[in-house]
Length: 173
Image 1: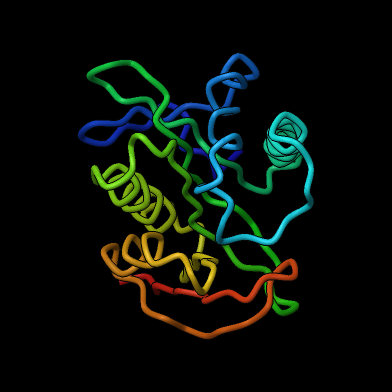
Image 2: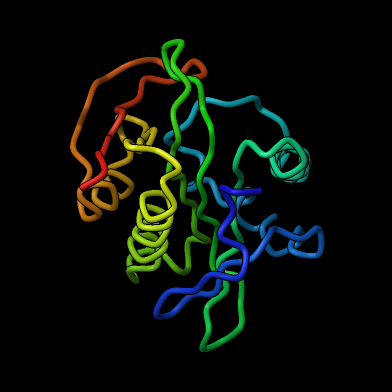
């Protein structure tokens, strides 16, 4: 599982694999309407969406196609969100994406920037790719700010999974 940051850390965060025991904490993410307002998805309930998300992470782990890492705040030992390197196919091209999601109560505290920088550095330091992307909804200004703060620039606008998105990119320095 070369794309996972299991056991890595940043100043305030520990990175580990997602565990099924995290489910009830992460379920709150899907219960909050603010977390899905930028993304077109099925009208399934929060529990079904959360289960599908966990199934996807475990599938990714098993097939070594990247996956999200649980982000544990060192000070409180609490799950604040997820960030990881994901193999994605965008416009027919396989890319390595930095993806990040935080529980709303941890928004605007710099955790996403810190975690995304760690993923960026891990990918480049371990020669996993020469270019990283982030797939961000056109309306998600907060996520755009994270991408910009880690050195990404807007590469193109496209459609991904039925959503109009910006593709931000950074190349290895």
